[in-house]
Length: 143
Image (cartoon, rainbow, N blue to C red; front, side, top):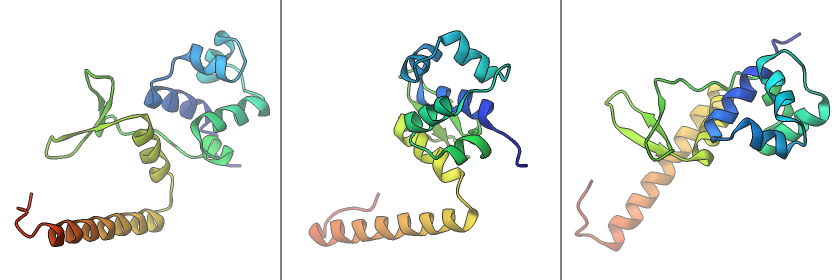
């Protein structure tokens, strides 16, 4: 049987999305104290609750249960504005809203080959956009 990651993922996704335990418990129609017990692993949620969480975060139940969705805290940090910041090795910060953070979490859960395909597609789209902008404005300086 695969290792269950549900409890860690519940906490991680709540923090990444900036949700309170009260907000989530209201969303899935349970008491906040019950949600806290789920998140700490002192109780296991029922199937209806797991389905509600998967719906809230727009991810599959399988992903929620078995995939480590933790975010490297060295790569994402809180900013004063309440947004998450992805920090590169060059110490440049890029603001991430909840949608961006969910996208990154989903990306990290994909197999390496699929991640590579996504990176290649993004570079392709970026080059096409740059070429289009360059042809529309030949005097445009490169950034």
